[in-house]
Each structure stands twice: as structure tokens, then as C-alpha cells.
Length: 254
Ligand code: TMP
Image 1: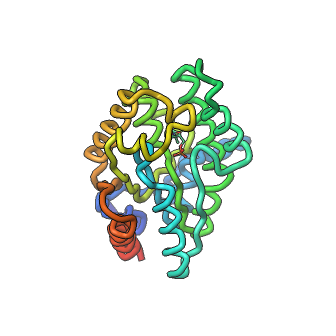
Image 2: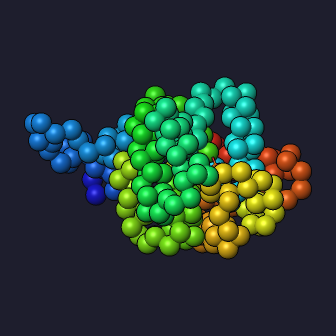
């Protein structure tokens, strides 16, 4: 590898604890783009992404919305430019899709329909909100992302995980979080806290136990990106643990 290529590879390596080197493409190595064709979005994101992308995820009632909002305030107080959003939702189109997905009247929705709707909402939010913010160097905090699709529609719903990984890549144009905070809670306790209000929360305890096991399996699979925190004790205690992880991630990055 030439010296210039090595420097470029170091410059582009992921900074959140994942120390593996990617062999980055030098500009002259990029595939030529046909005249009428836009370069692949994934490649564009790779070349221009400057901001930090953090997701929060976990089973029902784990408290991720509370904690992600507290983290937004914390990071703003440090002077970071933050975009906070959620999935499904975060855009007008995504919020409409969310309404369909969570509407208790849509009992008959198949798991494949469900998966495609979540993926459609993701395609929209990546294109409209997340990728543009990251390109501007903003830090994006997103309440749920692709891990939820794998846990809910894959591990619990029964759709092939590899297929969901592929579809997820397409929906997100190759964009992956730099860091994912998983808040882990027992399914019974989590469901009790969530209150069983929407179509997803109303699914069986068995389904939600599979969701939780799915998250645990994902956390084992992606040790570098996913940080698992057991939810117990006061909100402040869990929040301190999350802040420590995010502080470390920021330190590694800058
Ligand atoms: P929320 O209530 O945590 O915002 O999420 C909405 C519900 O959608 C929640 O039950 C988790 C579920 N969900 C999936 O099943 N698949 C997905 O890909 C996402 C993003 C969420």
C-alpha cells in the first residue's frame, strides 16, 4: 500500500472503538460514473460523512426515549450541533408510515408488510434528515434504527436475518451508526412500563421475549458498535453510564 493510501485509510477509519482498518478508495480509484447516473449513495455517504451518528435501541419500556432526550441536552450543553430524530418517523412521510404501523386496527398486517414499511420510513429519514445532517458535521441522535428491524421483524418475526441486513443496507444507503446504545430490560417489566398501547406493544410476551433475545444476540455480534446497558436503579444512574460511553466515543473521535 502506498504511503498516501495508508494515510487515507487511517483518516477514514471508524473512531468509536472499532479500530479495524478499511482500505479506503482514493478518489482516482472510484468507479467511473455513467453520464446519466448518480454515484451510489453509499459511496457518497462514505466520502462526505463528517458527523457522528448515535442510535438508541432496546425492547419496549427500556427508557430509550427518556435517555436519548437527556443525552441531547447533555451534548447541546457541550456545544455540539445536534439533530434528534426517531424511527419510524422523523419526517412527514415517516410519521404517516408510523401511524399505519402502530394503529391497533391494522391487526392483519403481515410481518413482511411490517418490515417493508419500517424500511420505507428508514429510506426517507436517511435521505431527508440523517445523511444531510451528517454531511454538515452535525451529531445525529436517532431513537431506533436498523437493529430494531433485525430484533423485531427478524429474531421475533421470523424473517431471515441476512435478508433483513441486505434490505436494511439498501434502505439506509449503506449508512451505519458509529455507536449504538442498547438499553436492556426484562420483557415482562418492559411491557408493563410501556403500557401495551399500540399494535407492536400489544404483541405477545413470547414475541417480546424474542425481541429482547434478538437485541442480546446483536450486542454480542457487534461488540465494537453496540454498548449494552442493563436498566436498573434510578434514571440518573443509567444516564451516567450512557454519558461515560458517549464521552469516550467523542474523545476517540476528536
Ligand atoms: P417506539 O415506540 O419505540 O418509537 O417504536 C415504535 C415501535 O416500532 C416499537 O414497538 C418498535 C417497533 N419497530 C420495529 O418493529 N421495527 C423497526 O424497524 C423499528 C424502527 C421499530
